[in-house]
Length: 406
Image 1 (spheres, helix red, strand yellow):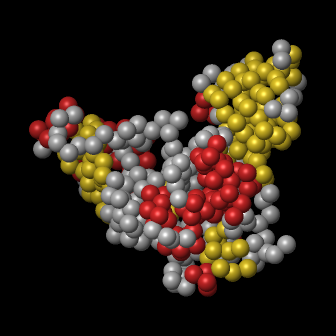
Image 2 (cartoon, one colour; image 1 turned 180 degrees about the vertical axis):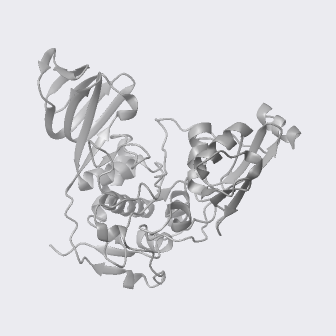
Image 3 (tube, one colour; image 1 turned 90 degrees about the vertical axis):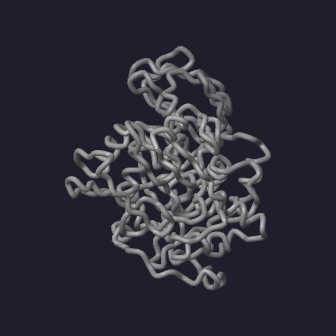
C-alpha cells in the first residue's frame, strides 16, 4: 500500500487521472449547503420534515397552481468578495472610478461621504484581475480599504446569470431549463445568507460570474424566460431549497443523510446515468486526523476512523472508535476539502486507505451529490428528457409549480 501511495505521489501509478484544478475562470458547478446553512426565514418552513415521495411517473400530477405567489422580484448579491477589490472602474449608464480609502469612498478623486448607489443598467466592472459585466443596480461602500459591492438583480435576470455561470456551454436546453428552475427555487428558499446581501456570487450560495460567453448567456436567458416563475415546492407549501452538484458518479445521495433533518430539498437518493467520474487523491495522514477532529468535535486519529455510507456510497457518518464520538460525513468531507483543496477532494463518495504517513482517497463524482446532477441531467436531456422529467427524477418529493395566470 505504501508503495502504491508513493507511486501516486510521484505521478507514476497507472490509471490515475489528474483531478484538474478549478479556478475562478472555470465553472464550479456545485452548490454546497449544510444543515446549518439550510435555514429558511419562515419558522413554518424549518419545522417541516421530509415527505413521502410523489410518483415520479405521474408528471401531470406534479404540476399544480401556486397556493402562494412568489413575491421576490429582486435578489441582492454580494459580488467580488473573493477578489477584495480596492479600486474599480465602472462603465455603464455613467463612467466612474471608485477607490476604497480605509473606510471612506473616493469617487473620481473626490471623497464620497455615503455609500454609492448606482441605478440599474448594464455595468462593465473592471479592476485588478477583474473584467465582469452585470445587468443590475450597484451599491458600493468602503470597509478597511476594501470595496464592498452589492448587485441588485431582477429575479429572472439573476436566474439567467446563475444558469449561465453554473453550467457548461454545451449543456442541452432542457437541462438548462431544469437548472433555471432549480436555481430560482434555491434562492427563493434560502433566505438572507449574508449580512450585506441575500446571497453571494460563490459556491457558498450560487456561482455568478457576470456575463460571460454571449451565446451561452442568451441560451440561459431563454431557459429562464421559458420557465419564468416556475419553482419546486414541498408538499406543505414551502419553496424547496433545491440543491445541485456537478456529478453524482452514478447515484445521488439522500438529503437527510448528507445535510441532516428536516429535509428542505425535496430531493431523494436515486440511481442515475451520470458517468462514474472517478478521482484519486493522496493526502497526509495528519490532514485526515485534523479533518476528523473537526467533524467529531474532539481529537481523533485517522487510524481510528470508521466511515459509514448510504445507498449512494457517500460517507454520511464518521465515528472515532477510540472515543466513541461521531460526526456527519458532510462535515468530514468539507473539512477535508478545506485543507486539501476542493479540486482534490471532489465528493463525499470515497473510500480511504492508510499507508505510512499518507492516506489514499479514491472516489466518484463531484460535489455533495444531493439533488440535480448536472452531468446526469445533460446526458438525459440529450436522450430526450424534458426539464419536467429531469426534475421529477431528481426531486421526487417536491411539486413542480407554475405561477398563477396573470
